[in-house]
Length: 74
Image 1: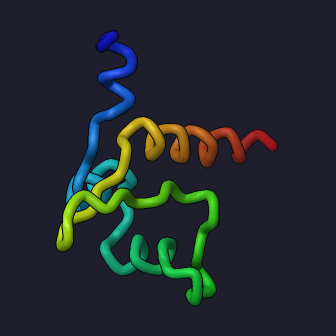
Image 2: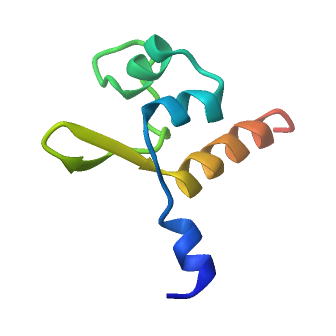
């Protein structure tokens, strides 16, 4: 597999997601909850890794952060 494709497949767990985005656990849960007023449909969707484990593709989270940074100039 090409190195670039491998980097796109890096999976991060919840604690890493929180550290990377600098968002609290409760804020992240609200961004993921469609019933919350703070729901963010642009936030990367989680991957179900097993019955009790989920993760996020790191490159999708970085792209989301990049889009938020670009919104400052819109």
